[in-house]
Amino acid sequence: MNRIANRIARLGLAGSVALLSVLPAAATASPGGPVESWSAMADIPAPDLRRLVENMPVSAEATQDQPYCASDDEIAFTLRHDFAEEVIVTAGAAGTELWASDILGTWSVVAPRADDTSCIIASGVGYSTDREAEMYYSSLGF
Image (cartoon, rainbow, N blue to C red; front, side):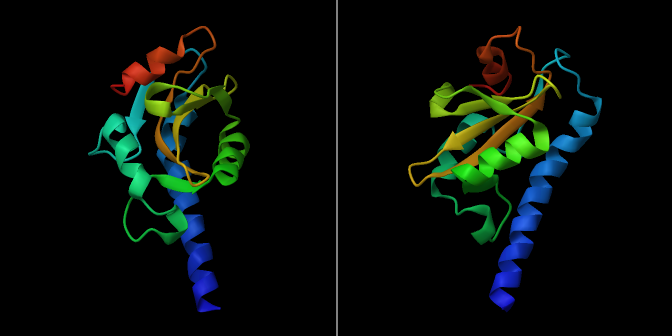
């Protein structure tokens, strides 16, 4: 029982961290505004983080700070439900996916892994269908 409660608490924490990292920007974001971006870990650029997430556990099993990693279905549900984001690019920079919302103007870069899990490695604001995907990737240094 204690193990299950611990797992539920970790899942809730991971979801909260992912949500809190976007909320301040989303509150002032508007579709088509200036493009702003940040890596999921402040001290690690997104291109470097892309390589590192391959060996990270899913967030429910994490013992330290890391990007939000979960099953592909859970990542998709979270981005759709919490941010109204949909897949825009499926084979972007370094094999990543670009998810975005033309409603909120938010966007996320997801790193799929071979084990049917993915990690959200970066996010930002200022999404617009009028811009090329490369603009979002280049803002992260890809």
